[in-house]
Image: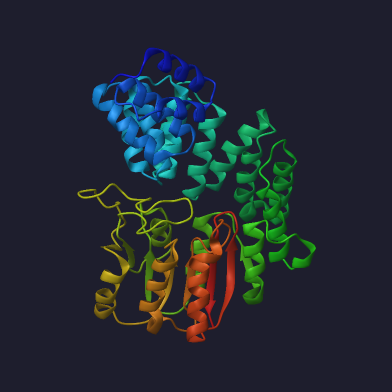
Length: 429
């Protein structure tokens, strides 16, 4: 039965007021609605409550009745993005943007989805088009800055962040992101100054102070001078200290730490990456060497949940999706690590010179380390992409490496750290 008009009116008013729980209660008593209007309102409220799976289901059903409704399509894209299915959200948002290029809310959502989908070049292109059309705003520019950062363009990223704070100096997130852009060019003290500006902004994220403390610890400061247990990045930095190389380098960009780590791997052997996705980091690695580089990925996303990310997050889009374009000296190996890696190693002799381990989760990292064990030698350099900094850092790549070293007795030194990206490079001794 259709949802009663008085209930629809109440739910519409409550949705506009941001009272999402009230909307959910109105539209789920005594049962779920079965009409487009009721399902659409409920789905939009569930997006507001971050109940993205339920929202997707409601909105998908609503759109079977009104497939061209732009409000419902936008809400569905938000739900998909919240589920880590950015590859599915992007086409919806692209169509909405093409239909109404002047809708800044849609443009911002599309730029964000492209960036989260690691489609950094597309995000930059979108924002460039908005700039040419005179529709550039701080929120969209910020997405371009982050995308440029991950592409290794520190100068371009910094220009975006500086443009934002020059007009709106209270934008803490832009001050924070900008600190990572200046470490390599202006030095750590300039980065610390920008962190202090971020911390001083009204409503600044509390994590920023943890980064300032982490830099102190990584440059010889005493851990006891800082509060522990409430900052993942600080706790991670403290965990690195026992194996910190005296000449450990600090970086702010993924491209920079990867290039440094590969150059530090002076021995002969295989160059590998585990966790390719759209290939941004693999292209950074390939740009720093002329030897063959091998990239491994299922391209189906995470095999299991990781923190707030669900299984399947970071997928390229399922069956039939094209693999990312790569330079001629890169070879991609599609499949789960435990299925593909043994055969690869049987066909390729020699030690591992360098490996970028961007597995995210414990089980995948442990699999890679187990398979590579006999190939890891003194001088091998490993980069872990999510080693410290996120909320569950101690339970995944860090844990897998710690257990591996405890079992094998392997010794190592941390030779580079990028707190902003969570990356750590280490050399086996």
